[in-house]
Length: 115
Image (cartoon, rainbow, N blue to C red; front, top):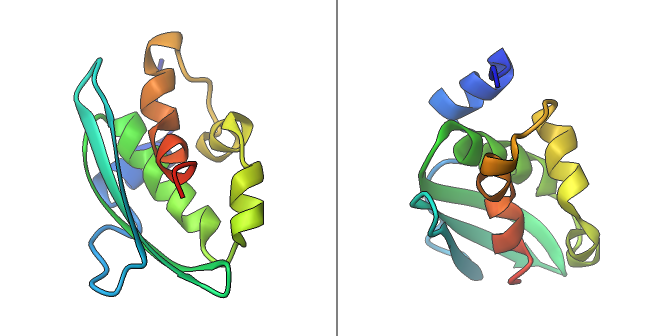
């Protein structure tokens, strides 16, 4: 699978990378099969994602997926977050994900479902 240029950019220069000292939620999720690990820092105010940052170690797909998904969820309500499914991640990635990389791509979504 050849990665799209935008995914490579999100991997090399991820959006929303960092931490939030005033986070109301901190969620960690890992992929034991490959060692990917992300930690989300969220500020939830009035049942809305006011801000989000992440720290992560992993492959290009997991980091790019987390970068794209954190961009997408800013300003979304918790009710909207609960309705997210894997299709939104695939739409954001804009490319097919091989079966061996599905867990990598869906790692940030799995973390968000823990809110």
